[in-house]
Image 1: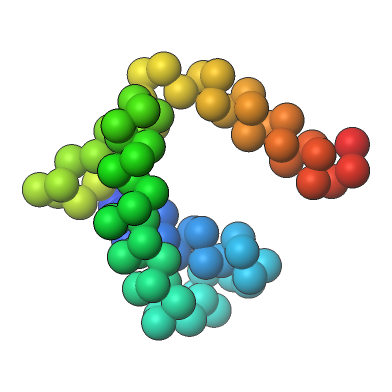
Image 2: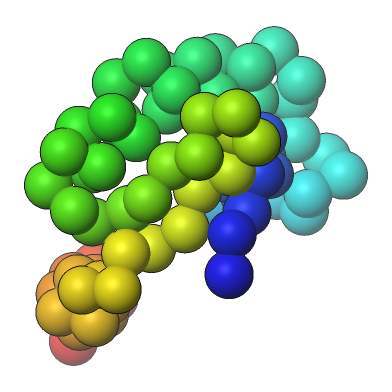
Length: 82
């Protein structure tokens, strides 16, 4: 499933600030979007973690993302102290 990069940025801000999506700060979302666009997404795409369609401005996990999801789940467990 592909997501617009702007939606990904909005989700990141909401998660980082522990707020609901409608409560995210537009300036912070723009800052995260620009960082994703210029830094994070190209790096992730270079390592085949995500696929990015620049002309549509959408991103999706690559076909080889199952291991990444497992690692993220482990890291999330560590943050919870488990």
